Length: 416
Ligand code: HAM
Image (tube, rainbow, N blue to C red; front, side):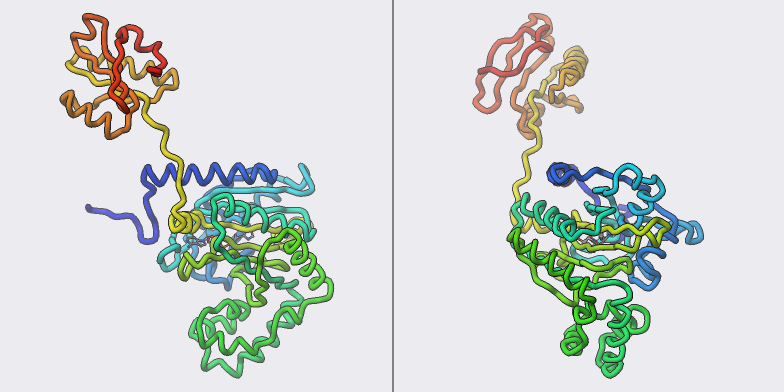
């Protein structure tokens, strides 16, 4: 092995590729029931798009972006900013006042790899652009939970918060900094770094000594206006109405600057330290920040690899691969050519069949048919070609019937 894959990436081998396809198809079905439409954007964007939307001081922008061409372009680390860019660039607001969009895409972040954290990973996500109504917040959370429920995942926790408007947050951040100044020495190195540039993120810290300090820190909720608090309680009341279990977490601020108002995260203890399956929130200022008219919006994204880890832990049963209907064994050169032509003709008729490609003995070809779980086998050699008679064998019970070789194309391969 001369060259290996880059750190933090992974190969998706056929078995897993099939599992992924199943996951995506299932998710697609639910998203279609909720009337979401798919959107795709380029794998890379102008770097300024992410700097402007996610924020220069965030971890993602300051240290995790894969940028190239003298920093002009960046592989997308997330999809919200590209979707909003596409929404504006294609004047999607003219098509409909509310756009309900979803995506399945690969993301790129130069993070320290560990279980559930990769440098290339995939997300499915949804973005609703154009409505600021609290019912949309509830619908968006319900979509994510419904999808987990579709897969039988129930052992999860939904955390929710409201981080208010930028103005509401500004007052809080001032007070938080004043409070934290007294404890700078005991804060973790990360939190000390964040103190100047991104103090809000200190609230997200998992460090035990930070947590002790934060216990008596000012609480963001207290800084929210009556309007924001009312909005928040409308969201919570409707969630309760829908019997959606949640925990309010006043410290859930999430990592990107574009968030406003509602933020949420769904976590699973089965994921270890990278425990978020999906997360998102409102970003009511982003469309305007990128040059559009004031347009409220909300969405979330879910890590497909993390979803698959949870599915594995839950021993989720993926559907079996479509079985091979027929394996045609060939003996000799003439039969080999005939068998290849036959197989191609059958496949044209939507028939899943296979032949030998290694000039193997009949015994080895039968072994291969077994390994591939073929439902039926036909053996074709010179004898069969000359007599125009062959045997079709059902592998499950060994029952054989006579078939005419020149009718092989027309058979429906059902002995019963
Ligand atoms: P995010 O929290 O950065 O949000 O990512 C969403 C999900 O992607 C996470 O909950 C996790 O499942 C998965 N994820 C993130 N980073 C990695 C990684 N390095 N390796 C594996 N999985 C990962 C966003 O990306 C926002 N754009 C979500 C959003 C949409 N907010 C509003 N609309």
